[in-house]
Image 1: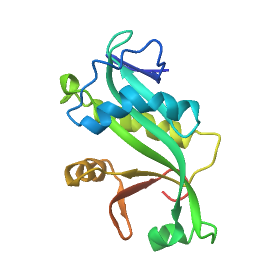
Image 2 (image 1 turned 30 degrees about the vertical axis):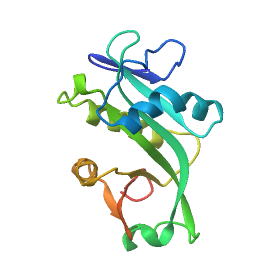
Image 3 (image 1 turned 90 degrees about the vertical axis):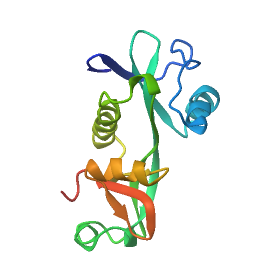
Image 4 (image 1 turned 90 degrees about the horizontal axis):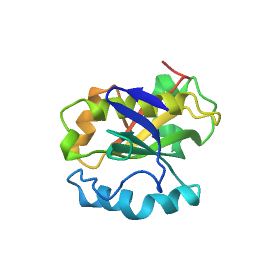
Length: 165
């Protein structure tokens, strides 16, 4: 668990954490947290981490899952440093959301840094963290934090984890 005052970031505990009050303003992200995430965790297709404002209230969340990206989609300088496979291992941050009551406090950036630390220190190797931005403002958020566009995918961005600083 990581504390980023005043938030505690930890793995979602569906039985203990109150998902019903979460509202980020995007119905699909709210619905995912309330109705789908527990099944994805049980099926081992995603891990979910939450920022808690108190013992139960979720201020924000993100998900991580394994993925791969086409080697050809990465910049030349990075491709030269990677094995010549058709695709390289990646970790996908599938969702990142902050409750409207907590927006403007930098929590999105805190969650992103936490996700990067988890991805970089994972026991399963991955060359990049990738995200699929939902729209141009979301893509701008990731670009602000150092992500680059994946070739031929205007809303898919990546950040090298260790191989190619």
